[in-house]
Length: 404
Ligand SMILES: Nc1nc2c(c(=O)[nH]1)N[C@H]1C(S)=C(S)[C@@H](COP(=O)(O)OP(=O)(O)OC[C@H]3O[C@@H](n4cnc5c(N)ncnc54)[C@H](O)[C@@H]3O)O[C@H]1N2
Ligand code: MOO
Image 1 (spheres, rainbow, N blue to C red):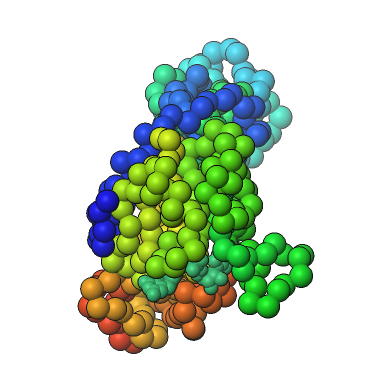
Image 2: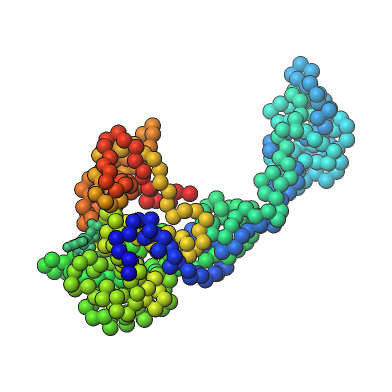
């Protein structure tokens, strides 16, 4: 077992465990928002499928209205119209024009359009007060070309990408099934919300904050409840959980004597590392139990969230072949000081906002037991080992919400 790793070393070992293949299912487009594509998607059509007009107006030959103006308008004969969806099928000759509407194909024989505001209709004729121009013609395939891949395996289906899949002509898409992530809580003091709180008790917040983080990262949380003190029971609980891609345990990874999960992992599985030079989340543990990767998250509510975010989320992104990174760091100006720690990378909770520039301020009490910091904050402020951040200095801030 390795111990006292840097954040980077620990992440590498966690990612090396992400070897599974999530299943694949086909979904109607309308149900695929927030899912991850399991296939490359090529366009089934050109868009536009013909040269078309970007404006309402008249299509004609550019040569027929050169130099047209209020004072000397060009006069053309209107031989038809081409609304979107009912294109004009004939051929347009010299001195002729066709009324066109945004999105309609450019009629054969024309090479320019003039906007309706620069025209006046007089019966069968139209007066053009400005030259017709090719600049408002959108060439065939301007947006999408048939056969070209615009969405890739591993792309998250955002609203824009759902629309793009539809624009390419796909009624359904193949997406990855969300990896199943077991969440097992430990600790005799932990009780479920709704139960009476005994002396020294604490409500099980970790199960729900982790459930949220797992779902946000594209996984399917499987709540496994709380384990009692016997190793056999822990194993039985896991057997009843069905196939899992990752197991999260919360609590019982520090120095305590009463830690049944760590005992099970040490005796029945293989502990790959324990302890990372970071705060919060220092006692993080990575193990394998019958081939199942296990992240032993520290019990403190902030620590379990931060460690899942920094390691569990990248693990799920790797399984899902995600094309975007699991998080991005931004540079912001610190409006409050942030304390660092000797020999440890520190992740403080901050509120990131734009006030003429990106700025970040502390959420207040930074104790690992103060979950309010994660509820109030929207970013982790990263302080490298042995450093401090003073007010006004630039810091690295990682938004906790998804940034494309
Ligand atoms: N002598 C030492 N003590 C501690 C060390 C250390 O290195 N030496 N490390 C500290 C750090 S850092 C952390 S983080 C915690 C990690 O502790 P455990 O993972 O063993 O977790 P517990 O002791 O079971 O609980 C810690 C804390 O979190 C609360 N908790 C636990 N589970 C839940 C839950 N599901 N929902 C809400 N809150 C939970 C628990 O009541 C404790 O208050 O250890 C330090 N100690
Ligand atoms: O490092 Mo522990 O994770 O403070 O709270």
